[in-house]
Image 1: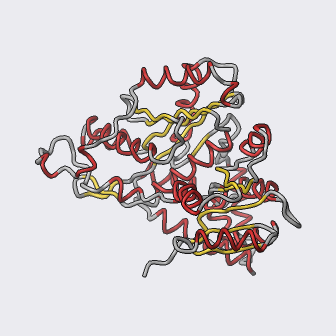
Image 2: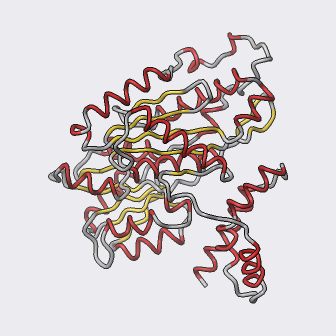
Image 3: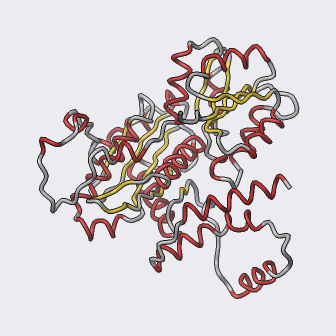
Length: 384
């Protein structure tokens, strides 16, 4: 029997925790905590947790303070984890806006039905990219295949918006910012290996892959959001009413989920890793629709240039990481300083460098395995 994924429920009321656990236990393994500090320790030590459902008012560490700690964590599985805030339903628009700005992914109203709660959480944690992308393997454009073998889902295919329509939707969203709580986000996704894939299999195949990614993203976004694909194989989400923090958490989940997927193209493994660039209002204003889109594309390019599988949301989110002689000397001394180093944490910090070297020299390193071993060691170091 498959092991159930785990959801962390945090509320000082045992009755409230039990009610949520009852809703979730058929589909998830539920871990309960009564205060924010205990919830944080549980989250750090338990890598099987896929989502947090949390009240705002908690002993020791409030729900929003817990969220702030989560979003600045250097552990990827923690910093982008879906965080659902338990609310009464009487909150003002400003209350919810402030919560979204700190990185709340969604809201669960107390008294919600079981089906509503499950639908809300499932939308955020079901990231089965490999299944969605390779129901029938993505075939190179040069291979002719029998269209009668196309899976049924492809016959009722979803069509992404084109560039013109996407631009028009963004303009309309910007004209009604007041109704959108003053916010609109643009997330541009791009396949890190796009040029290589296009060279091997042709631009048509790259656009097919982009369209499939857009279809997956379409199933994960809100009813007012729109997804489009451009002629360069990039996927763009326009999300009215979403804060930069919400866009960042969403994009990080997409990039992490794709990096862990196993997809083939023409029978060969596909290095399906993406990066994302984010632009938003009011954070990046004042800008018109064209400028906002270009800013998202520019940040996507920066993310890919820095080694890929990365998300950039502002001008300071890219680390100034230059390999100067001084840096190398300090690193050598640091590594020679003893065997009690937190090598797991150090390895995790060096993963962007490993990805860059792997990309530049085509080492074909098992990066996912390396990163997981670093993370496992880092967890044991924290326990010790």
